[in-house]
Length: 106
Image (cartoon, rainbow, N blue to C red; front, side, top):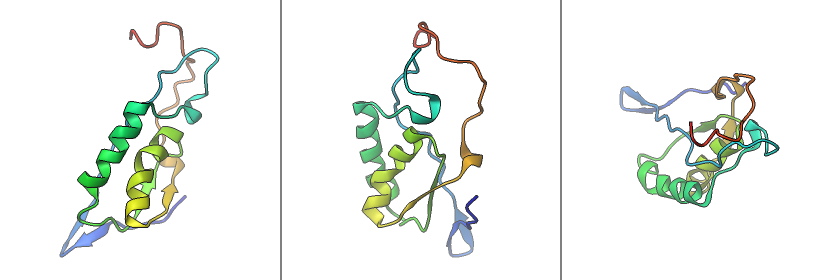
């Protein structure tokens, strides 16, 4: 578990929450939920976050350990020279239900 405090702006703390960019859809036999990556569209969205979130400059970048979440914030982290810290408490809820062939339709 990462122990962290939000960056302060004057007397205010600014915390920005970002959902992961567009990932590949889960499919039977595909990577498990922890290892699903971003699609090309998702990588483009992650690059767009750099211009949207680089100012004010973040003091810390924390992500879910899911690959798609880390990939979403990596371009921003590189841009501002910070590491990506992962925290398992930021993971999505684990339903235990595996992907099905009609997942995308739902």
